[in-house]
Image: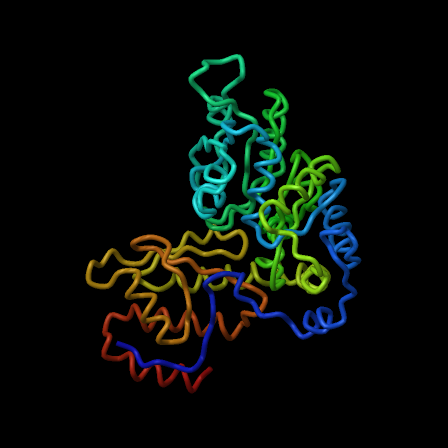
Length: 370
């Protein structure tokens, strides 16, 4: 039992950031028009800039990464009953409400995600089903990758790996889509420009509200032909939002000001991971912390499981998400300070002390010290 505190350190996701003052000013002063009619100048500016960053011909703003991925899959898999190959632990497959099948009529063909986020190349190829094959099977049209791979702890797919998957896709006449929700994190961690990472991809979904901390939205990029089709689907799905320049203005600030902060986010994540791993009863694979996501393995205690741990941490003002029965997910972002990192380590120490009755004295020390 711990005593509640007024301090809050929100590590549930990098989506929880609040708009910065410069974002709010940009939103208030944004030049806008009707984007469905193609005339919003701030949206056009954002889309042009993101397309250039990704090295693609064109781009389109969408309200969410889920919509961006759904539209991308549906453009490439343009016949109902066709098939997409994707990781069994990928965001599209696990966390996007089955939209590719329920709304698009696209069959998901899963391949095991390895610990580093990859799918074994041979397994991908073995999963491809050709129009010349058995008529009992759907026809494969698309391969999806994810980088960073969230469920594998924010791991980065190497350029060499993505290139190999791209070559495989071309060999079989398939398209390649990359869920690049945290592509800027991958770029910073690898020291490689975004356009080089996604060079082999036919389309990419880039989230603005995760790593770089914009309040809303994603951008999908691809060829001009791809984006033309994508605009029709966005309208069908209710994603035409008129004066979106208000949102795009904040996203431009995020691009210009927050990408440079990602290296510091990654550094703090490693410091936090190392600190948590030093706590006797916890385990963190520190070498797997490549970007801003940490997974903490907690003791397999049936009397004090992940929900109990998260509630105790919440009482101390630390918000985290249960990932599995004995695993906690932590995500760093640019609004987490060095002091926050120290405080979180201390709170985990309190929760997992050998002698819980000492919690009150330590908590008082923490509140005084921080």
